Image 1 (spheres, rainbow, N blue to C red):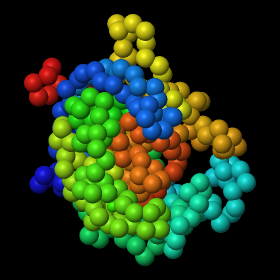
Image 2: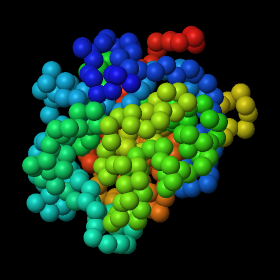
Image 3: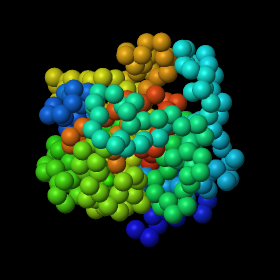
Image 4: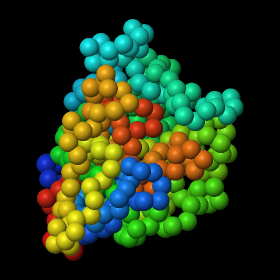
Length: 330
Ligand SMILES: [Ca+2]
């Protein structure tokens, strides 16, 4: 993987695969799972057309080229509109983003406020806040990117963000119905195949996989399609609006959904925060913060809703290109 972290010399035209993309032949697969979290159910059959997808998440080096060429300013760098956040304290209405911090000891796992902090000044170049930087992290996935920041990059690159079905199909690497991208056995506490969290979350990380935060793209074995980091490292934005359950399998085999594109925007709001009218997209893949003891989401079927304005230290993305046949499939 020589090209890891090396940006393309110039953004290719729309519909043309970027450097270091992999062709995923179209096909049918079982999407979802009924063995873990309710939002992954039901298991249902889906068909997707072939597409290209980045071999690895977009890196800091790649994102830096985009920003240098366009002057793009990410959501985390911009002032916030108080009207979007009714009731929010004034000290939170300043540019910044969410940064993970471990705790000194065990904490109740039902309140992410114990390990997430809104840090003024945190953005992709200073991902842990002012004074931090990305030196030495050129080949790590870019983080602190909101949905719009990921979509802007994809647009600049002549690509798009994958749909959830495309992402999951690619992550499965040809293993029909498997729990993980590598098979059915959870090896993360014995012989890690991905950058996740080993130990007691969020206070004790045994670093069995070698990484507390992000890892260089491609540090772990690729899946059956040759894709890196489809489990763990960073959650990845998809283009789909979140709905709390998949649609059920159609009765007739003739009617397998083709190229589904998620739910409706209006369905995606967080019912637990009705005063916040910010829609949510689907994240896939889990991150370096996923652990079996808290969030067993380093699996292809796993999905998580995220408000489109949110940037955190464990969310990144990769791009896809549709409409251009490749490999042996037409
Ligand atoms: Ca780790």
